[in-house]
Each structure stands twice: as structure tokens, then as C-alpha cells.
Length: 165
Image 1 (spheres, rainbow, N blue to C red):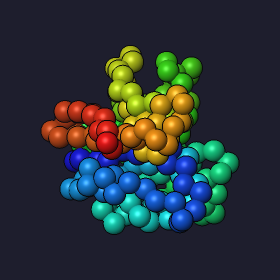
Image 2 (cartoon, rainbow, N blue to C red; image 1 turned 30 degrees about the vertical axis):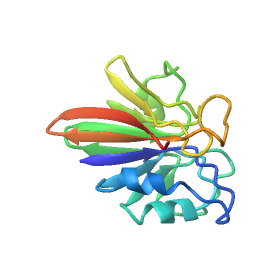
Image 3 (cartoon, helix red, strand yellow; image 1 turned 60 degrees about the vertical axis):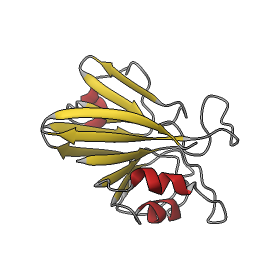
């Protein structure tokens, strides 16, 4: 299974545009996971042109009512792995994974920092795709954003960060 990863789009309205490069990178994915700070549901609708979308709720600006695609956390069983998605996850985590997801996970997709990262801590793979629109610690719109790809095939997991430049 190939999963597209995106976070921190911070799109305030449909007047703003996301880079079409995002859809190019996500062509052929089976699922897209948005790790929060979305702001409006049109972002998820736009991504669904490529594949089904699930999202983690970000800050209070993520007000979607009862959109079934958006939850505080998401937990998915993929191949032989359990993936947990949440918006904010400090590195290293302050609590066991069960405290965040209600059960152990071996892959975590998170956002919030706007800084892309792939890191394994205590056997758990953490992937933060950065921000597609406001990358890095400076949150500069004039810099290319990033997204991620996660491949889970025959028990093997590979993650990569893709620049939108």
C-alpha cells in the first residue's frame, strides 16, 4: 500500500490554492493522510480527487462539525503494522503510544512543527511530512513545501519526504 502524507496546509478559504504538484506526487497512492491544521474541508475534498482521505484534527481552527474523515487521532491496520496519526507529537514522545492512540502502534504520522522528519525511536517509525504550504521553522510561503510518501509492502515500511519545488 502506498500512502500520501500531508500536514499543516493552513488553508483559510477556497480562494487560496494548493500546489498542483501535490496531486502529481500523490498519483497512484491508495490513501492520503492529512495530519492536521487543515482549516477547511475543501482541502480534503481537493485531495480526494486522487484517493480517499483521512485526517487528524489540528488546532481549534479545524472546525469540521461531524466530517467522518476527521478525528482527533486515527489508527489504521496496514499489512502487519498499526499506524497512528495525530497532529501534535513531541519528539521523543512524553508518554507511551497507548496514551495517545489507545493501543500500541509502530508507525506514527504527525504534523504541527512544519518541519519534515523521519525518525525511529524505540522501534516506532515517526513521519512528519512538514508543511505543504508554510515549510520550516520560519513558515515562509516563498519556500517550497513538502509532503511524504509511505510504502507498506509485505511487512516492510519505507518513508520518504518529497519537496514540492
